[in-house]
Length: 257
View 1 (cartoon, rainbow, N blue to C red):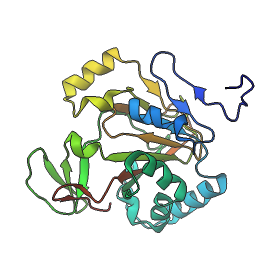
View 2 (cartoon, rainbow, N blue to C red):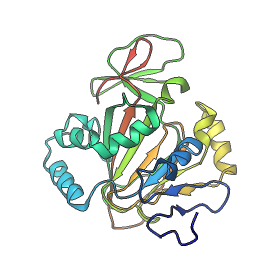
View 3 (cartoon, rainbow, N blue to C red):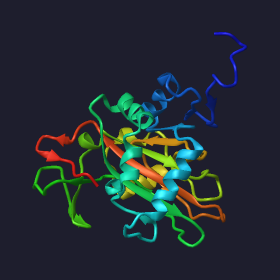
């Protein structure tokens, strides 16, 4: 490989230790980020949405007549603007490279962190999935009902077929409460609270700093958290989840939320 490889072509190594994540210009070369997504459970991919696309989406979201919680908008796939972004060819291509050609977007959440709507999230994994119907099945549960949608905590076998793409509508910085991850923890299965706490004491956390229009791809089982924002700059993120197919396991069909 030429020592004169251009800055545009060269991935940027952001780690300080053996954990590494490729910030990948030219992201359509999967070597730039697929290894990170597989081995660490996350990858940072810049420049997926253009600035005009972000502005248009923000305008449509601000005008949408939907219930808003303190943290943003839950079950946002029902919004045409969100559904269109979820099916954008760039996002679909990322999801397909990880999960296969039959991927579907099934859930979207708008997180809107600002000085007036500020919160922290402790270290955790995302284990609850929306389902079309409640079926008492081994390894699934406990169950809950949120806004009329059935949810169950899923086993690792199902969660391994899910990928979240966090589309950043603002720059994510060290000051405005970015997502933090414990790299590699997605390989450990569904963890107890005590196991998560123990991991957080011995694995170096990484801040996922993503520019506006960029995407953080993450596996639901990678242990993650976020702090309160210390900035006046908002941190709006559209969190879209994809599955390898609508039937996440035999007899278990995902709901669109």
